[in-house]
Structures are given as C-alpha cells and as structure tokens.
Image 1 (cartoon, rainbow, N blue to C red):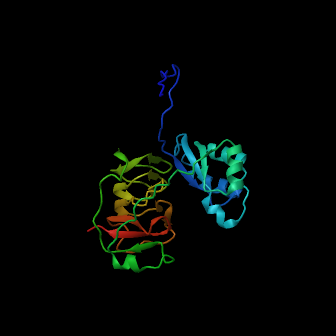
Image 2: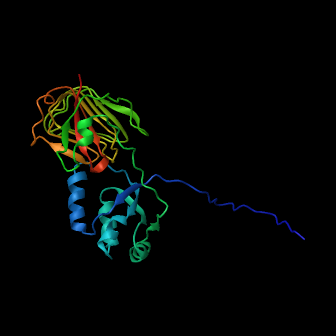
Image 3: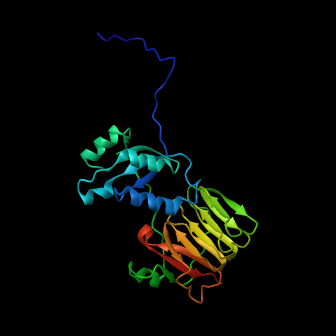
Length: 265
C-alpha cells in the first residue's frame, strides 16, 4: 500500500541550482615568486581590473611537470591582492586536489573555460606565415568590424584628449576615443578599441582574453598595442604603409598567434 506523506517546506531557506560566471586562471608554474612578478607587471597599474570576481584555478598545465606541490595558502593570498576570490580548483592530480580541498576550495571539475571562436582571415600572407615569425604583419585591408564584441555592453566613449599618465579602462565593453591618445597615456578595453585620432600611447584590447578584439585608429603611432596578451612595442618600427595611417590591428591564431595590421583605405 502506497502511503503519501505530507510535505513541509522549510520556513527559513530554499536550496536551488545556480550558475556563477567565473574567471579562470590556468596555472602554468608553481613558482609563486615568478607568478607574483608577472601579475604585478600586467595588473599592478590597473587596480580595478578585477572586482572581487570569483575564480577557478585550473591546474591542468602543471600535469606535464610531474607531481608539483602547490602552496595554496600563499597562492590564495597572492590572488586576493588583485581582488579575485578563488572558490574552486580543477585539473589537478589526486594530491593537488586533496590539498586544494583542505585549503577551502571546492572541486570545479565541471567548470568550462570559454574560448572565443578563432579569428577568420582571408589574407594569404597571414595564413602562410609561420607562428614563430614576426608578431606584427602588414596585410591587405579587411572589413572593419565595429559592432560590440559578443557579450559586451555598449561602448565607453571618451571625447577628450588623454595626457601622459592618464589611463582609461572600459571594463566589459568596447572603448571609443574621439581625441588624441598622447604618449604615456593608456587605453584598455575588454572589447575593441576605436581611436578616431592619433594613437600615440598604449592600447590594450581584449584585456580579458577576447582574441576577436581589434584596435582601430585613424593615425597609428602607438608606444604599445596588445590584443589578448599578444603585443608589440614601438621598439620595432611600423611599416611605412601603416605608420601614421588609418589602420586596424587584429589577432590571427588565437592567444598564441600574432598581430596583423591592415591599412584602412
């Protein structure tokens, strides 16, 4: 005989499934001194790059190095200095995962790292260049994409010149600058960067790994340009058909690829 029991919902709580957007850190080395130096070099002058974002540690790159010990207390303390909140770990061996759980991290085995679709390109010169070749390559003009990158909100628009020492960061969106970016100034965006004036400072697009981001300027004279961590500096002179000309910069080959510069005609 089937007996139906009366249900009673708790008065003080409910438990439901939830999804949480995470930042993923692929840890390629357990040398925390080296990690600290590289974090400082990349984020030390962008104090608001992270905003207490939850983070999952991906230890899979360490597995090729054998049984590497991770100093979790020191690692978690280091990461929190940059306003990220480590909450989970994935990809480690049995010992690494056990130590992570003891350090208060949850198992994030189901967390998936988002990777943008590869940048499409039709330029024969870009397609045939070796990955080990120069990281900036002039190429025939391609159509300029001006729509916001997928998942980003409307662009941040700056209509004043940026002087040396000034920094603008378009968090989670594109950046449009209508005046000159002077030497020593820095413009950063998670999406595309459009400078409708001379670009003479630093421009960092795809700051959170968006390999489809682009940099566009009506007068390309930068100290540094970077897309998703791939960069070039003014130490390498720009080709004559690029220098001081309307140009777009794109990344071919993903995060391990190279920058391609297209004249805009």
